[in-house]
Length: 244
Image 1: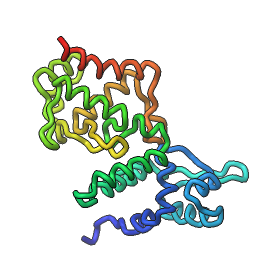
Image 2: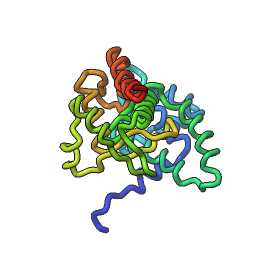
Image 3: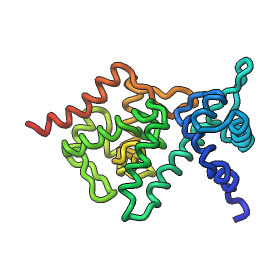
């Protein structure tokens, strides 16, 4: 294992609750000044400065000098993805008999701490996550476009036809070196959204249509006015077809 990546340094940096709280406040890719992060983490300015210095030296944060103030942001989108993965894993690792109670309590605390833009729509690996994604997943299930068996998700013949009419062809996705579809756990919603190559294809469709955009150094997807209408219409069409 001579060439295995060393993750112990990063794990040590994120293990401190105060440092992880400041990292969590930066999950949307925004830049915040040191005083604001100190307040959010319940630290004195000097203590926050020391923690932020360690996170910066460890390559997790980058610093921007604006006049006399120092602003901090995540060093790369991959850092945010790693923090989110650890947050999801912390819920998944709880004993089964208390997991529901812990999830409810943790979910409320996490939702209060994270920027609202990240809750609504965000990049989850290569697909859409957040409230928008969870609602879309449920409506596609209700309409019979997809079916879920435990964690396995299959596209129905009806779903394949409807998706093809929108330019998403299941036959083409089947040749990719990834799972076609899966129920990806969504930490902010406590319900799944659509992952796999189909989830990635839908995100690509929404972005190419100009409904969603991803600013630089951010994982929070911006929803345009047209996107608010069209993405929700995309989901509602599935429900309406069930009624006829």
